[in-house]
Length: 497
Image (tube, rainbow, N blue to C red; front, side):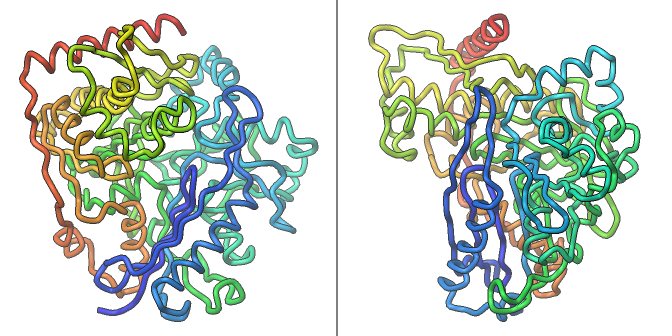
């Protein structure tokens, strides 16, 4: 089985390109960070042109490090930060404004206005999503309303809308392919996930002209061919999925009841519910896990806005650590008699609370509290928030019972201390895979299987390999005390919002 596959992993803070060989092993990696723009409090933007340049440079770097040429690459898969919005000119491909990032909260008041009109039930029923600034639809409305002439230009067909995957496909194919996949479409707040189509009623509510929307395809499909001038050869793009769905695929969570959680800038847990579109009663999201051969698989998702970002805050904001990996050893040295809780609501609280006005808070500090206690609190916050998500999932979908095994991925899972504490606080096993680049692996499999050079779904699932299983070691009394403290901290934070 030959054939190299290139995965483009366009994330929130950096872009990575990874070349996998025919045995699904990493042959070369390129990575480049890019600038975060914060024009106002709660606003987060990216420069689409800078993102595009990072894609070009990392792809070239990965191919070079793999020791191959572009003609050796059988296919490309693209995974991306979801919900981030770009609008560009159809004729020139030039963005009309910076990309508005998924973390951005500028449309909170507009979401509240729609809720007061009683429209949230309509959005939830059709999209599985809540009315929150997190999602693309209200960001797109803001761009059309605030960029001079944008509404009229969009109505006349001059402008294109897309999440990052669509923008990259447009650029890679030099405008020949204007498309997205079902997973990215499902996060826009304007896509009906039951009918698998853009929804006319929601488009009217948000004043979005239908002619500016991309075609929606399966996750494994023909997304065009790269212009040969970019990398030296034309390469077909055969797989696309939003980052969290790509990680679900990369973790081989193909059976209903399987669960994965990704720990990057934020934390996102997805529970495969199969063909059942489960309506959450606990403020989780109903979303598309993937769509293959025209068949849709659904998931329940819990979204946490701040996970690794809390570690970045310790490093760049408080400057109590020099590098992210330092947090594990620092947390291990923390005073066990101090129960310090960090509620990292830097950009509001996600599931299951959904409070965009909540802000970060620290509870339980004493004169003896120092960097070690801050580090432990930051890492434990991720674990506590994951526990909240799993409890909500079990209430919504009892078929999974309490017999949970959590498959984890993302940068934070390299920390043994964090994964052990996660298992302890969940009171459930946590499985860390051999390949931690599961997001890139997921879209690589979509592209590779479509190209016929990688195995089918069943064989791919069998190839999933575990690096280590973390089993709960914390006694029940200690766990209950710590969880009680966390719930108190959350309650106080929400009350202050």
